[in-house]
Length: 398
Image (cartoon, rainbow, N blue to C red; front, side):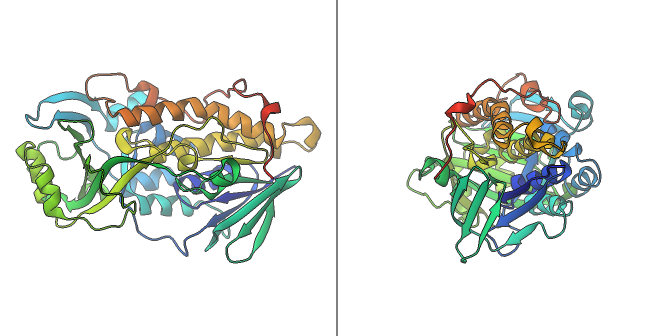
């Protein structure tokens, strides 16, 4: 068999999912993560039915563990900010299970990472490894790390986030765009907000302008309720997800919202605050034996709750695209690495770009609409699209 020696830059949700998918496709994988260890940072990950169905393809124990440790909202509800008038409602839970083959699961990012890490072959992840530079030729990719180490692999997957070193090496340095919108995040004991109607649902309170909203949903088997709020604030550009905010400032911003929405904010003892950044959709993700995945190629605003989901879908399609290379004993009869990577990106690029643009507009499901094109996607069976890029236009990076 022609198993490949594959490197992945980034040990987040997308990188770990890719490691699982590629290992199950018969390849050897090394994940290089710049952190010294995984920390319980961040907060929620909203796994909509398309994403849970994608993870279910790995079968047990991932599918069981995320359901056990997360929560399953009963509905997805949109409400007007001042009157609480309901403008749309989608059944989640059993309804989504019947319609899409999986429910919605909301889970802490650290719990999702732990579930994924448990399924990666021991020794796959190397911590404290930040890529300084990379070069490639016809036989592989060489990585140089900031600690002075180097490594050689058959190909590289850049799953290293919105500030991707791999993306910069392929396409040049470029700064993400600050949207002028900041977010506030908090998790509160559900008992404090039990009297808020349908607190067990995913609820979005649409504000008087597109950048003002409050989103809430259950976490930790329903013991906690996650609160996510956004508002315009062009002068504040701190990007870190671990910057403390002012809970009184949060409440003041939404002082005119409906009393039920304000109850959620009154229950917050503390809040984290960060600026929201994005990039334009990329025309290309791959060069030679290097490709991108997740936020490295399509960072998006959180307004369709698809950021982590798109990385998970990417990882599964990438694993499918590279599977044939481990299933032949004669490399000359199978697809090349370059053509497999092109097949992956052309299959994924249109969908991720559409969701990037839709997330930016922040109108999806404000009123009644069709959620099937998002929630009904099947990463394990979607057909490959090999006609969007002429492989002859691809050039190797120096």
